Length: 81
Length: 425
Ligand SMILES: Cc1cc2nc3c(=O)[nH]c(=O)nc-3n(C[C@H](O)[C@H](O)[C@H](O)COP(=O)(O)OP(=O)(O)OC[C@H]3O[C@@H](n4cnc5c(N)ncnc54)[C@H](O)[C@@H]3O)c2cc1C
Ligand SMILES: [Zn+2]
Image (spheres, each protein chain N blue to C red):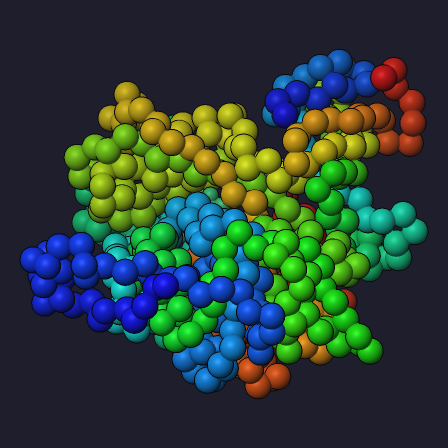
């Protein structure tokens, strides 16, 4: 994994992006949202920010065993891809 | 069959030399997997092997197995940059790591195996007055606890590490340092092999190529583990799975305060003696480089985490570049030296950066993990304390703060003061 495709800026090198956190399971309470993580070999759902570009917040779905990016969207929807 | 282990000494090695191959025996293994144990330890990394060793030696637990999905030493115990130290700010951390450092000092004798503890010093370099006052604070906390460390001004740093030429013009000038002289390095593979050999000699079954795939429970207690070699009954189970502990949580249905991140390291081709100590160089807004020279002459280097969850064990290239940049900033003369190897390991990053040694979900299931990128140095203390917890049911004072419930109760051990974000700098 060396690139992410930002819905606004297109394919950009990974160093332009900053990983924020993996998301808790849907419906998790406050404690879990802050401290607990969902660990999976197949799917990691994460928040990133395009700090070196549009500065948009991104919802990224990746396979952490292969590095494949399954999906990269703007948090809350919107954007092109 | 590994058979009885000879006792290593200068005399016995000389005899071995003269008697040819007959002297050497496999260091561990050779016994088949049995169907029931008093304690099953999952993971033959440093922490699993040390826990098994202390269960057998200190607590007389007769039937102990260590189940390893790959090979002894395949995980982080064989991938780290071998640095040991106890220069932590928080009391819960520095007392624990100091206990470990004292054990490193005598480990070769305790295991009858040369782990090559080398107290060459660990030097944190200060690049600003801010850095220096942070280091003074940490150093004072350590000295109050009776742990050795010294704050060095430029002249003292020059005396301690002349090869660094601290006064040379640099983009980020060095203004001082914090040194812990008893810190240094330990040969990482020897630690895995030494513990495996000593544990095996005490009757511990070390089973490689045996992955634990599930936990069987009945009436709220664990009864055994499912493995790729069949079901194994166990009175108690200890997960010492380091970078796969997040997955263990998923397997047990217990979400953990752990994210899995890569850390990489690299070693250069061997060169003549250049650096006699360990340097830690954090350069503002850019990154981090820690560097030491192995006995073979290679420069061993590492830096920050890669920065996002991964199980690939492939380090990102721009991180390698950043680490090397830092090294060249310190020693411009190594600019032409080639990197020989680069590798990465999966790290069990907790939400406060400190470990977890506690029960996990069941009264007879334990976890020894959350070692982040700094758990190699903890192995001797963690093995002894975790074995005490598993054998007696009560956590020794030394690890009471490492309980899992601290995240819910607010008693975090956030050495970095960074909040629940393992990669935020
Ligand atoms: C590049 C790098 C540099 C580092 N540098 C330092 C350093 O300088 N100083 C320091 O103190 N620390 C350092 N660390 C951290 C340190 O190496 C680790 O914190 C420590 O080794 C982890 O504990 P361990 O030895 O028990 O882990 P490991 O050796 O990873 O052991 C865990 C074992 O569990 C096995 N396992 C996992 N799941 C299962 C399962 N389901 N069934 C059976 N077996 C399983 C794995 O295969 C593995 O062998 C570094 C780490 C890395 C990656
Ligand atoms: Zn963008």
